[in-house]
Structures are given as structure tokens and as C-alpha cells.
Image (cartoon, rainbow, N blue to C red; front, top):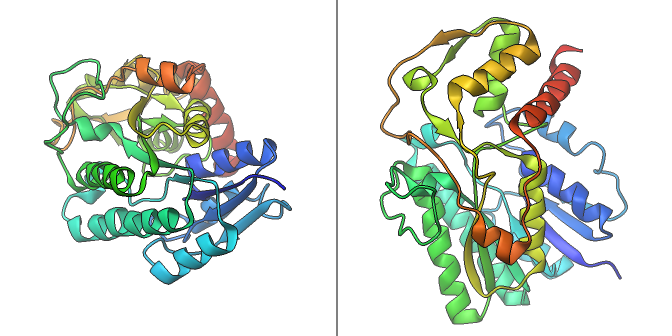
Length: 319
């Protein structure tokens, strides 16, 4: 019998790649996605087009806030491990939408945690975020930072679930690993994410908003490297852990834009306002813990990753 794993947000950037990896390992993958219209449901369906009919893939079109539906899925499939990737994302979009982010990211996660502990899931891996660190003075970002000053509802909701994860570990013995993602990019990128937006707007000749004239730094991490870390977290019962998954090499945004300009063969049209209060000056992962506990080893350099993104973009949005 194949090992059964459950992946929420299975049709997204990370979820679709992770589903493919776990299927290739021989698992039965139960994917949950509600295909909401935050961005194109058509793109999400395209993301999983190659696996939706796979004999070991079960797609459940369900909202994680639907308690009864979540319980039925866990009862029916009894997954051994969970990768919880589904969420309302985007720091800036969360501003003014705290009730929505609380409902989806916190209440939805509690539904999953409850269902998981009832059937005795072995490992619950939770997708957290580097934006939890806010405007910390600690560089590179390290997991021992208390992270008690989130800059918007999105990281606040993620921190809340990290704390709830400890509650489930303490009360129910659940193995809960929160993996904090740093600026994930690659083929199947969400249209609201900076790598897609920069690529798309340069290709179209549209204006790009580049805060602080591109003097901010982001620790861009290629999707395949992130998936390797998440998959490892699903397989290792570690008690309770919080682990950074980044590349550990921050890149200036203006250098990032230059790479995309060279790939597309066009110059960017830029607006360069000051960064809003929700935006940290830098994200920078200390990944020593991930290397030690998960054998995490990011391999993809920014130029190579952006080349792959550009290839995918041309196939799906130009040709």
C-alpha cells in the first residue's frame, strides 16, 4: 500500500510541485484546493493538469474552513503526513483585510490541526513565512528571534498558527514543523508575486513599482529547493520545530530586475516610491538549522531560476 500524504493548496506554486514530487516517490497524494478567485483558477488548474488524472492523486475541491468536509477527508484517507500550504497570502493585500486572513489562515488551520490529531497524523508540516521576522535587527534571520512584531495581518496569522502548532504538540504529542519560506519563485508563480509581476510587466512594457529604487534585498528561493525542504519536513518527526527555508543569499531588487531585463530583452519602466511600512528592508535566511535537521541544500542560483520562470511564462502567456 502506498503511503498517503495530504497537501493543502495543492494547485498552487509550491503545492503543485510538491504533489508531483510525492507522486514520483510512490505516495498516494490527497490534494485540497478551493480554486478561489484570488488569482486565476484557470492557472491553478493548469498547474495540476499533468497529475489530476494520476491514479494515486485524489483532488478534493474543498475550503479548509469547511469543518465537516475537512473531517470527512481525513477520516476517509487517513494521511500519514500533512503539508499545509493553503492560505490567504501577500503582505500588502492583507492590509485592511484582517478578518479574512484570520478566518482562512487561523480558523482554517485549526480545522486541519483538529482533524489531523483525531486520526493521529504522524507529521504536520506548516507553511509559514519570512515576513514573520518584520523589521528585525538580527541578520541573517534566525529561528530564535521572538518575531513578536508582525507588520501586517498576513505574518501575524502565520505566527498565530506556529503558536497553535506548539499547543497541539504539547497537548496531543503532534509532530509539528513550521517551515518559514523566503521569497519563493519559479514556474507556476502567482501573478501577484514580484517575480511574475516584473517578468510580465517588462514583457508588456508596463510600469513596475520598485520600492526604494530597488535598494531593498530579498532572499529569493527557487521552488524546487523549497519543495525539497518541505518534503523532508513531512518525513521527519521532530517534535516541535520552526525552520527557515531560504537560499541564504539576499539579492538587491534592482539587480533582480536587471536579470529579468536581460532575459526578456527589454528595459523596465520603473516607478520608485518609498517602501510602505509593511515592507522590511531585507530578508535573509540563516539556513543552518534546515541543513542540520532536513539535509536541506538549495541548489538553484537566481539567474538559473529566473531563466526557468521566463521559459514557463513564454509558454503560458506568450506562445
